[in-house]
Length: 216
Image 1: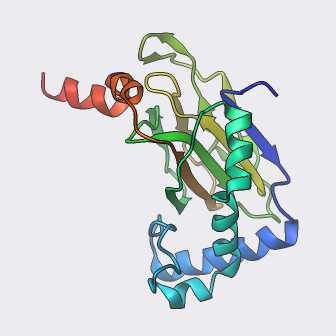
Image 2: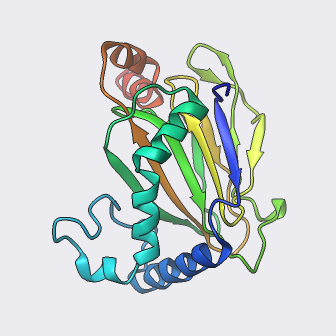
């Protein structure tokens, strides 16, 4: 199998399973009135947030499956990202009307692969007019993205988008949400061991460039 810069998976899990998870998470978002949950790495582990974890068994099971050795082996094969460690790094987020995310490359620390699992409504299908698409950008020169995306991925229920995290290369954004439908997703990263190559490449990362330019 050839490694891919990004990939898109349809029919990620059973429809019933992810429908239950969608409803459960949405109830807690409404209750807490927040746009992002805590880091799911700690949910239900080491005695932390056990009561909340007990209300979200589907979410806990999905998290554990995502970071299993079997799934990480598949991620390595598909993306060609190299070795991955056991770091769990994900959270559930919610984009509402007007929310968007500007173009960036996701490079922070030891991130190797970014993923998004879409948990939008299974009954009210997402369409292009709703906005909220994941937009992938080309690199026109070193560390500089193009002005127009070359790929747009709608946040369709029970699908997963993933891509290699590469400094000054893995440029992407989230298009403004135009609808009042909640754009719910689980977003996270697979991490790898730190090495000198990653440290040097980090000079091209979006965060590094912003810090550098802000000081001028």
